Image (cartoon, rainbow, N blue to C red; front, side, top):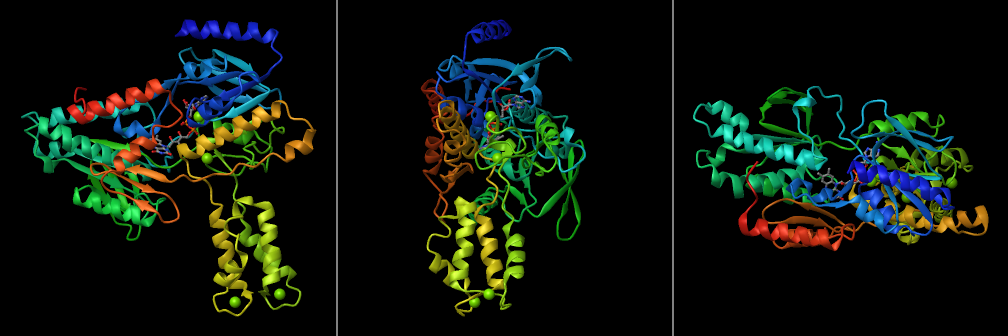
Length: 520
Ligand code: FAD
Ligand code: MG
Ligand code: MG
Ligand code: MG
Ligand code: MG
């Protein structure tokens, strides 16, 4: 491993001496990064990937502890690209250098990688929300995490089976608590694993002593999905005796108990646990935290991610040199509700506080010009006008305009932190960089290149046993028997090679035939 790494650095330098190609450096080897790599034209750039993980991890399967990975070197070989196993510590935007520390090197052993173009795709970390005691929790981000959790579950089952273990200890050991909205699939997988596999092998453990709980702050689980899906999933979990606690805030985590409070009453509760998974939201990695503070004041204001424009270019960096994609990036939202309301008040010369259809059309055209995502929403403008003219007065009053603006703004809400978004943004940046390589016509031609547009292909969540739920958007919901297969086939994505897909297939058939492996 180390040997391969060293030799590729040397080779990279040797080649670079008579290589006129621009240097493209990609930070990360996850969904976003790999989508860029798969898009690049090998003749155009000298590509170097910097990441502490030398493989791409297919995260949707992580909750099922099926590790599906693809070596990053294999993906890079098509490009003749280079990989450096290291962590980006800092970026010098002025001199176009990335500061890197080797993963297995001692402290202070750093080196610099120069770039002409940089893609930041370093993903996110769970948010802590300032909760104390998270060192007692498990996280699920890497293969090591998945293995650790599995080992803990097994250890707890073994301990719980010992004759020296008291009833109370046993209940604690066999209580599995998941905090946060992104743990629902894990809860489902865990439930399956416990009930289909483990309980049968541990005759000394009464199945009703095994308890899976989900603590979540929103009113529903899977709250970013269609409401029907949330309700279906909740009903299913209820049947299975999965304890779903909604509208709750985790106050503190002790060594073997979670303390949470009910958001409406403020009353506190304690839940003992053997394993507690912390799986809440999207926060900045240390690198991203330090990068946003370095950029010119006023250019970055989001607390969760790096802000980019609609071409995924990092705001505040020299044009077309630095891009950010995936979980670590966000496109700022328009906030036009207040802006437009103030504007209207100032410009309503006749003082009637109303918009006629013609005035409304002018407003809509201006909004579309700035936010092309709203084209569809505003496609049949006469219908839109009718819809928001609640009192059928033929004009929109201030309240009606406000309702319209709020709905319009909702259409451009921040994209979710999903593999789908990272994948599409990666493809977009890969294509753009290819085109920029040989574009003629200067700034005018560049300005004509398309903006990033997200196409929602539906959301999938595996909810265990009888299947997955599928939200195709526009209210189309599919669930129940058979959807598990759909779920699985959807995840045969283009991201991984045929070799890996076959491995996955073998793994699934094995699981269906023999149950999951229960050794530690
Ligand atoms: P990642 O894929 O996380 O990649 C980040 C990369 O950056 C990694 O290779 C990491 O090693 C590297 N890195 C980190 N720090 C540095 C550094 N300082 N320097 C260099 N490299 C660095 N999404 C879905 O759409 N559907 C699902 O079913 C789904 N299930 C999920 C299940 C789990 C358990 C998890 C954790 C996530 C799931 N997601 C799912 C979310 C999805 O995985 C993320 O949205 C997606 O991975 C984001 O892609 P990314 O490229 O931004 O980040
Ligand atoms: Mg990535
Ligand atoms: Mg994002
Ligand atoms: Mg008027
Ligand atoms: Mg009206």
